[in-house]
Amino acid sequence: MTKIWCGKDGWGYLFAVIDAYDREIVGYSFSRYCRTEELLQAVDNAFNYRFPSGVRGANLTLRKHERTGYNNPDADGYIERFFRSLKEEEVWMQEYDNFAEAKSAIKTYIEFYNKERPHSALGYRTPQEFRK
Image (cartoon, rainbow, N blue to C red):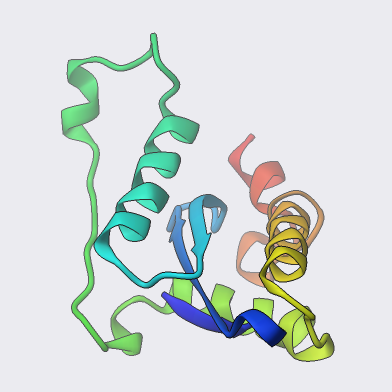
């Protein structure tokens, strides 16, 4: 989770789920609130993105999931690096007037990050190119 200043609306909270294999942001939730509900929405969005209804089955129990501890940025460098890139390339370059403006910009950046932004760790391919 990372905080983003949204001008007159105060802080917004971004929860994101990254696929460690291809560095794609597979689910996220951006909210005015920092609650378990928003975290679970990001996880649910990720699950529904990778496994749309109709393709879920017993084989999903074989997937490996990693969880990191609270307040331990060294434990999960992939998502921390995404948050840093988001802030360096988008958030710190702007002054959002309100929550809606920040939400729209974050959505656009995540689409760019997944589809257009090359990653050196992926051989300078985008997450979606690497996955293919």
